[in-house]
Length: 168
Image 1: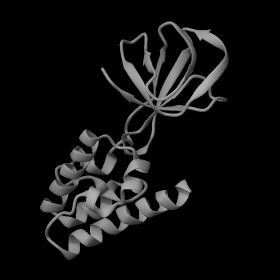
Image 2: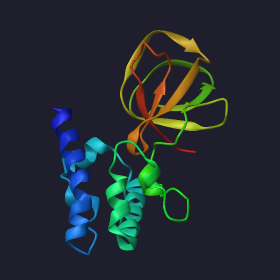
Image 3: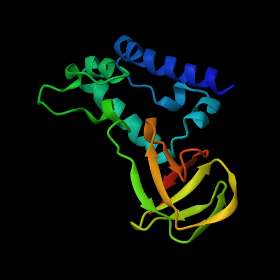
């Protein structure tokens, strides 16, 4: 069921630049996608607002960079005339995994569970649940970036990841 939604989102994002070329006014993502598609993407209101602003600014300057922003892999042509990369083109693609240890024990997680890391960061579970057979004490974890600003907490590479967002 999620695949048709993801395909729909990808199609909407691929067609978005052509819409920008055909008309001068930018249309917010909320108006392009259904409520179900938006919830599948999982952007917070602040992230959605930022993405709309960045896409609007890019489309106001020149429609050509908006076309480059939809490519799956950034290329040298995605660099602006000033030699700097456009932030729109690389949302979530340049983030690096965060390795740390959890403070205290973890017996599992569910939406709303807050994890505090030794590095001081706090991450809250948005999606996913897991009950461990036995609690782990201060396990080493990795918070892994995904596309579109998504983050996933990984306790062990053989276990399901929890979708998380930073709250500190």
